[in-house]
Length: 196
Image 1 (cartoon, rainbow, N blue to C red):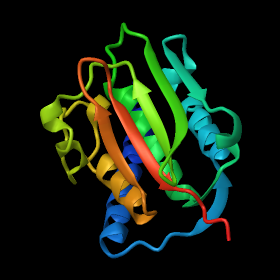
Image 2: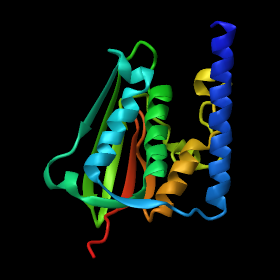
Image 3: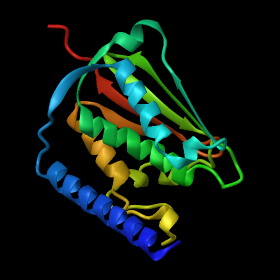
Image 4: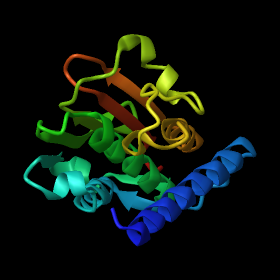
């Protein structure tokens, strides 16, 4: 890689790390959400747009299937748009980074369903999965399963911890529900907007 491109990539990575650390501090200090009412359809559209910006999904080696049917698409949520986008970006980037070997085709299925006054968004990949023994550890701050210092697996290990904290600040949750060997499935639950 030419030196100029390398410096640009280094700067981008440092900016992302600083942003994660700042957000981590804000979450620990009590997060004030800037909420608006949005539809399930819009959240699913964000998933498509974020995936479309990732190189792994722009080639023939990546497929994202976003599913949602009927009335659920028009259901409303009251969320902080920027922070929910952060959760989705983290889940899609993690799948692109960790899910498959270079020779495999990455597949990601994203969808939504209603469960007990919550909208549950699922993010399923076809990767190698996550060992059951690590299914909670991946949500701990500064924790990484991949111990390599390779650029491909860079980061501070804050992404999933931040994502879970943001979901909880909304009154929802983020869980890993499917382990190896059949890939990973993350379930993001967010409360339906009240109808008053």
